[in-house]
Image 1 (cartoon, helix red, strand yellow):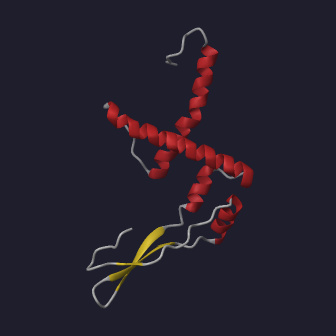
Image 2: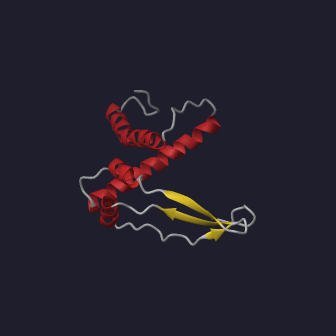
Image 3: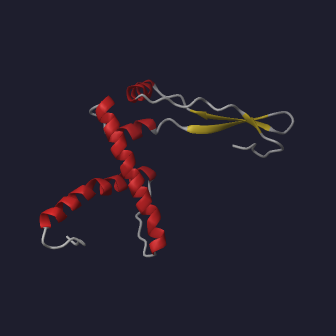
Length: 142
């Protein structure tokens, strides 16, 4: 194992590597969740974004794992993300007679098992936003 730690304390170095395991797993999970290709960067400025993404993924998994231990023991963060991935946000465009369109941004209603999971975790979907209307084919402000 390579490290910037002094060679006098291999046990300490081993503990640090063990602590890095969840970070590496979270980064792998994030790349799998987002279906990202492998990241190979030689330019330092292009390395920062994947490191930030790994840090955010680790934070997401740790906090979700903690919440699951409290409210839904036995579930994994991956299982929750897979279950909730079926809830989608979509825009419904309805044309009007004057050439404009009503735009309804809606999320799909969760299935029974998704509703149970959301209730168990104490989560609620936000209210459906009000409709917007386009002006001559352009979307009104988001």
